[in-house]
Image 1 (cartoon, rainbow, N blue to C red):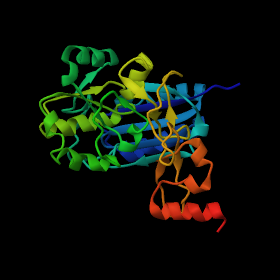
Image 2 (image 1 turned 90 degrees about the vertical axis):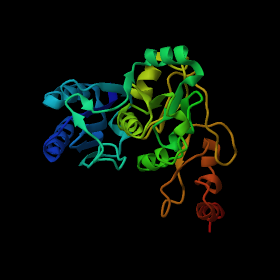
Image 3 (image 1 turned 60 degrees about the vertical axis):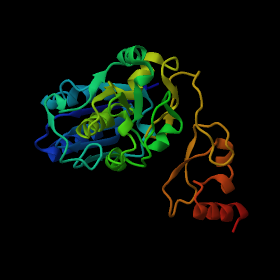
Length: 305
């Protein structure tokens, strides 16, 4: 039986011709039967692809032939091509959409002026030495933090990465500017940019977790400072670092513990995901995001109207 895997990776490096790299990557993935999402910009590449493990290994070898990607790190995860609806390879102004393309500077070593990278064990050492002075700052969308986050983390009120600059400039987090701040996100790519944006706005001591939550979870499982499930952007929706994890999320409708996200039943006008337990998700009347108009549609479906 063939073994499948998912690869997560990114690399900040100057790319003179993003379209050429996009076409090469698309052809490479198609030839290997890989599916997933890849974004290319003048700042680098950011991707998640899945498929047969041998195809993934060949993909790594071929991708590292490009000079700027030679030392790119790949993280392995459970899953495969079936976890993605298709292959999508696109050119964008940014490989993570913070609306800060003009502020981002990269060289062959990566983001210029970003936070200090900490290995998972160095994160724990920082907390041990600086105690409660350390602030964990979630670099993801607030929705993702509903099911998992670092202990006592600050979770910004953001729906997308577009919201971060206004959030940082709002003054809400000025109390953190003289504190050691550890930013974190799924695999590390969002924090590469976020840490730079924070330093540019007066935060003085900013760190980021090398390899993000994924690397930290691989190192410490559920016995470290991470709690709960990790939201992922494929059909799995979430993953855990062992069976002994804590369910932090609560069902929107019944309040029970859950890590189950669903797409709102009102698919015609709503694209929102909602945290709804499997029991409530199985009932049309509660298989929605909670908005009044969606609740009304769900009630109609439930009644057969």
